Image (tube, rainbow, N blue to C red; front, side):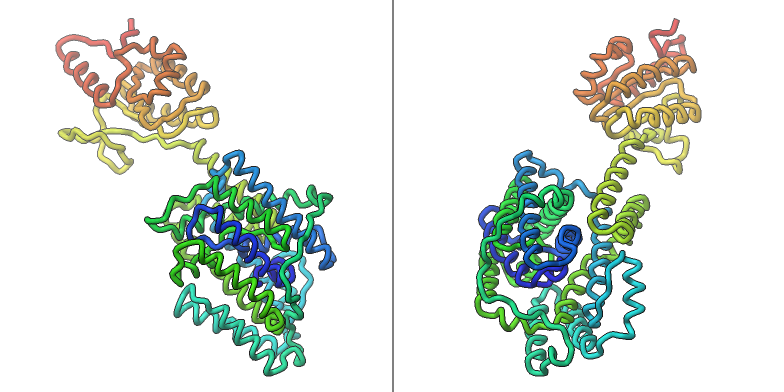
Length: 531
């Protein structure tokens, strides 16, 4: 119900979402305990899209638009499953997802604060909404604020004492009882109002809305699957079968498509709901079937009582769940490990706050792609060496003594894929290291290079010529089979010959040392092409 409120939909839609989608996933999903309904992230994204399509909030139009949006989300997930796009679960990096969710959490909290105090503000963007809320705060309803803040404090207290407990159920029960006994609606406290006591009726999506809803549906489908995969993996135990991404795509897609015809909003695997299932001892999808049965019982029996629930109490529940999206400890952890990825997280957070939730997904994806591009375009190149008397070769840091470098031999180990986007950076870095250390032989350890593109191959060939002009000989070692095939196909392997290509780096080092020892008694050419 709380998620339906976030989406700007009638609370009964929340019960519908915990009914049909949950049953479908129970039979199709690969996770034993994943609880599938809506989530705070999906709800706020749904709200943003529906506001564009139904700006006047007409209930009948909202129901049809929601059915269309949910069906479209499900169809996209099913198509992705057919194309075996399960890898998209990792399309948004963890730091970016951390920042995105934190931004979503802040947006939802600000959206619910006016309801907590009995206020109404016209939405005009995150920062303007803050100013509007502060300006209207003196006009807050005291009794509504008491109800909302009491519920909020109780929820926070119970969550602190016993995390993942069904505290919201107790708060809902207490708030309904207080509303009935004290007549809160007569005292100006907004309540949910009448909820129909019936099972969902069949709703047919409107195909005319498909193109309008498609961009938002793509974002919600991506977020639904990302959250589903993350929650499924987070709560899996060693005895559980592995999470199968493509099967999850199919299960979540079918859940959304089936739920769309029965009044559900977009659904996905929820972390908080799944945590409750684990906390109460759930081991199989029977827990989801029980939850679906409880939803049916609520629709048929408890609906009139739920109508007495104060909006402020429901807002308190939403705020507490949204606080879980904001994790300062994760930001600190990211900052300690990688400062650049911390900037990505902040960029995703700021993107949501400045541009909105749907646009925030685009920002998150762009930031992830820029981060990936940055890493690919700047591969690491390690200087490899060993101390005198030590047989082990290892990366040498700038702090290591020069004795760790084999005299006259510079061993460099590039890492990753060498291709057009990073070839110039690699060439520049190699040139700088050669100028700095002035070796007789440059030995490239290609054991960590899993692919070399044509542009990079040409760079290696050109580097061989440039190094020869400086009196430096180029050797290659530890080529992976695919890379070796490319080097042979280019004709460069024939040019180098066996005396400049080695199966292992150690072989190259021994060959260099033998050459140096032999040169003591007679000159030995390190480069067979020297004249």
